[in-house]
Length: 405
Image (cartoon, rainbow, N blue to C red; front, side, top):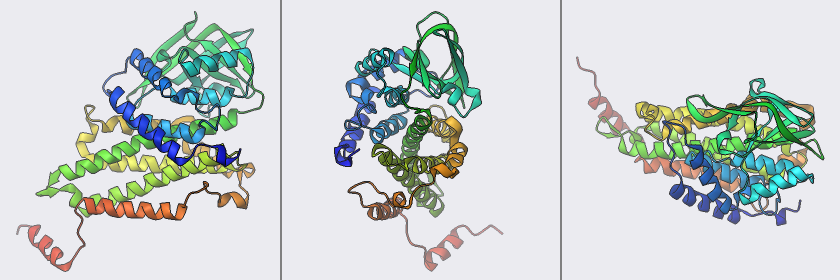
């Protein structure tokens, strides 16, 4: 696709600012109990009015890069709106012209349908379950299905060439809320000979769709980690120990500076992979799997460092930090996690050509952006009142903390 036709950075920034303001005004997360499905449905209906439900259908209106922006903002707000499922539905069915696919997309885009998506038998995690489709009826058990109680339809992969569409209000559907890492929002979906429509895919997209799904989950984990990082920075300016804010201690400053650099690395690599995807670069899969592998490890490491910075308050369910910690770990291990991404990136078929290694988004200055990260880390240290070490400060410290004899 011609890169000139794709949305530019200004459009994505407007989308980011709009969603952040919308979610700040319309959503309040509660980490202690499950969010009522009615609240999730109502929030999604309002998000549809923001135009996010059609992202992924027409890349000139919004492709994977814009989907990642939305997912990051939802992760930041700890909002379980079914954007992940909606995006995968658009990416999977946008080129399919069967009646069931067209009808579902039309309803999804106007808010008349809310879709829960499952990779089923194609999920690298075999505990995710599967569905068998025979004579127009679906039978099986699916686990880890997000916010299914808030949705009207289920879209599940039955093999590499077909998906099944199931109405969740049909007889024979049983939904059971489950928890993972202490977090609510998942469901077990049991289907017992439920009427279903088979949607034959025009091309075998599940492998690519799996990568898209992982990138979207990593973006949501990034949003959660970024919000937790900002909370930790504010906390270090308020929490005092030994008569001063803990942000003045170099150990804390170094920890937070490393977190910032890791977060910026995750943001840039995810955005670069999505850029290659939307531009239909032949090597986008390699860069996407590499970004997923890097992001999974980096985000979990950042999440742990933030937890260490918060200390005991980071475990209190009344605080915002625990829900972000859970979100990071849940999203980074889903769909096979980093191990599956590494194995895919090492496969011979995914090794890129030399031209793609230097491929960069049009109009971007990556060296400048890298230097910007370093400058921001330096400004972070200065904002925490960091002072260069000196012999005089060493003597003062030795005097103040000299052990009693």
